[in-house]
Image (tube, rainbow, N blue to C red; front, side, top):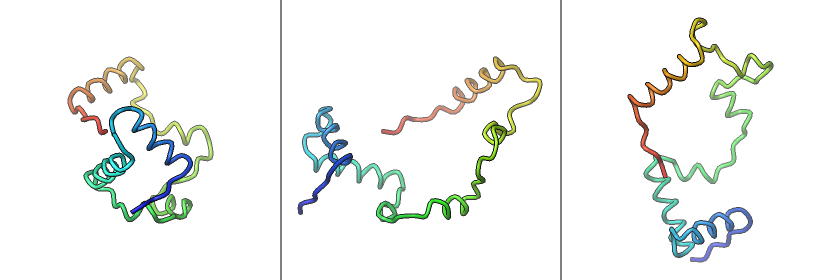
Length: 101
């Protein structure tokens, strides 16, 4: 089977080969397919085009109308920035996340 790729996809595959991690385009594609499969990604969805507006509506995402929309509810009003940072560090230490490649 032969598959033609162009543009950004071709560049991404070539970068992976140049990095020394893979020795052929086939190895890059095989690793990508294994990653998608192991991550639970429905590969058949990759070929579908979606209506972004409809998808956002389905997910309940509201448009940003002001700076306050971006800020969110924030933390406790009496918490200092140092206390917030310490809280984040504490959470990260108590539940480390394994990096995904």
